[in-house]
Length: 94
Image (cartoon, rainbow, N blue to C red):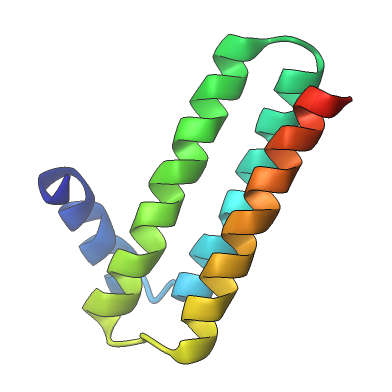
C-alpha cells in the first residue's frame, strides 16, 4: 500500500496540510456514505466508505512523514474513527 500512499503522503506533507485536518475530512466522507446508505445507493456508499478508509490511512502517514505525531493526534484519530463507524451504522438504522 505504501507505493500508493507514499507519493500522496509526501505531497500532502509538502503542502503543509495538518494530519488532523485530514482526519476531520473522513467525517465528511462518512456523512456522505451514511446518506447514500440511507437512500439505498450502496454503490456510492461503498465508494465513499473506501475513500474514508483511504483518508484514515493517509492521516497517520502524513503525521509520521512530517514529524507531527502527537498523543492528541492519536486520540483524535481514534475518536474520529468511532464517529465514522457510528455515522455509517446510523445510515443503516435510519
